[in-house]
Length: 251
Image (cartoon, rainbow, N blue to C red; front, side, top):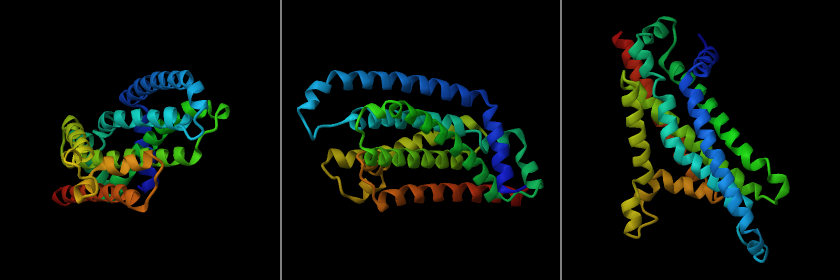
């Protein structure tokens, strides 16, 4: 079985899961309400901002805060969605069948991860469709919106990889979801103590996901921030692959 076949199989499996559709519907309903509220606040203050040529615009007050709401939901939605990727296979006893079909551990992990990533990117695009629907009536800062979108996409990819790794080490999807949630929150707030102490440029700040994500949401794109997310994704997928390879050798 090729990687493409594994990706197709996992995508079909994801499309028939009720949980995926419930999460999509509920999250989009919440984001739609947030968009309506943000748009209302934007329109209320439009006259005051007209006297400020360099004041915040549509992207700053509507699009980016909406993406920030999606980022907050992602800490819960991604673990719930991806918790069964490998833990479910182990619990149902179907993981040996994949090994028997000649699937290497790396292909299993990547196939499931990419299928999850497709769902998350579709979720992001549906969210972006809300502010973009009214972009023709404003003068949006496309560069800042692109940077913020890139930041959210990288964050979703990192959280998905983190959950896949957690799912590879247990046979209980609920445990994988809890571990991924706690690890994600820990990565986000690891520098909280340093910030309270007035330290903003130390090594512990670099380790925090929030440091890199907030830069991108502000429209600041740097190689260091992108590299942080790429390294986290690679480490998580490598750990998941190694664990599955060990299971295959024992089997």
